[in-house]
Structure formats: structure tokens, C-alpha cells
Amino acid sequence: VGLPDILRGRLQRGRPYIERTLSLYDIREHEHLAFLYGHDPAVAAYSQLPIGLWAEGYPDRAREMCARCIDFAREKNHPPSLAMAYALVPITYHLLREPESVLRVGGEIFSLSQQFDVPLWHHLGSIICASASGEIEKLGQLIEASESSGQNFFGSFYTMLLAHLIGKTRSVEEGLDALDRAQAKMEKSDERIIEPEIHRMRGELLVKKSGGGRSDSGDTTVEECFRHSLD
Image (cartoon, rainbow, N blue to C red; front, side):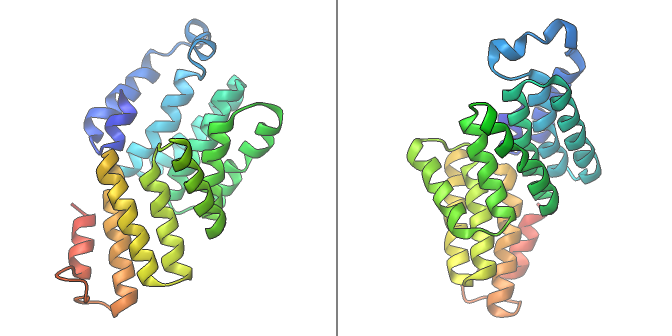
């Protein structure tokens, strides 16, 4: 319940559900749930909560929760739960603009997947690591593979990562086009949590394109983009 609300930007509604999961969790009483549902509920909560904390403006708490998630998942030593942590925690590290942490944690999924069959988490971990290491072609191929398989979890976010790399290393116009695709996916999936980032990124690309002030993209101005990113 909590994660869908957080991804839709309903932070004050979603976070209490996740925090309640952690407050009710008893490792001796609920340890079997990892085998019943495929992942440990506390690891799931720990991996999801940092995204909401970041979005609410608590980067230090988000960073602390990321570390707690990894420690707890390693202690549990349940491979699918560990794979979930290695795939989802790097999302928060990316939002915190810490590519070294993305690669340090996300890279763990590759050695784990050599021992255990965790295809979904391996794929999502590969996407975030490709972004952090600047591998545009690989990132694009991984996103296309996700779309072809019908796996669209956080697809708008991953397309936004691609837009950032394209705008940074290729052309602003291509970056803006990719950002339009990310926004279209966001509108379809209602993953509103990344909406401020899309506006911020669009503003940065328009600054790069026009040198600031009013761009030639209709009535869209750099100032409007940054103002929307703070709404």
C-alpha cells in the first residue's frame, strides 16, 4: 500500500504505512513471510522508505535508511530480499546524486545473480548501474527490454535517467525529446514522485540550450521549470 502512494507523490499518505510495517515487524514471528511472499516485508519497507524521505526533503534520513536497509538485508541473508535491496536502494542514492554509492551497492546484484535466480532485480540493478556509469547505449537497450517484456515498474524514472545522459553527452534537443517520453510515461503510470525532477532537468536543459531566460520552446521558461520543480 505504501509504495504505490509514494510513487504517486502521496507522501504523507504512503510513508505511515511503511513505517507501521517496520514498527509491527518481529523478526522471530515474521521471518517466515519472506518464503511465503518471496521477499522479507521489513527489507521491502526499508528499501522503499528512503525514496519517500528524499522526496519530503530529508536526504540525511534517506541516506541513513539506505544503509540500514543493506545491513538488515545482509543480516537476513534471504537472496531474493537481498536482491531487492541491491536493486532499489541505488534509486535513492541516485536521487541523492551519489553515483559511487549507486555502483557500490547496485554492483552487488551481479555477483548475487550468479548464485541465485533473481532476474527482475538483476535487470533493474543493471539499469541503475548503467545510468550511474554513463553507458547510454546499454541503458537504452535495457529500458527497451523492460518495455518489450511488459515490465514498466518505475519506467518513467529510468527514461528520465536516459534523458539526463543524452542531454549531457549528446544534444539538448535529443535530451528534451527523451524527457518528453519520460513525462508521458509518468502521466500514464501516475508516478508523480519524479515530476519535480523532470521539471528541474528540463530547466537545466533549457539553460544549456538558450543560456537562461525565455527559451524558444513556446511559453516555457527556465524560471517556470525550476518553479514547478519546487511546487
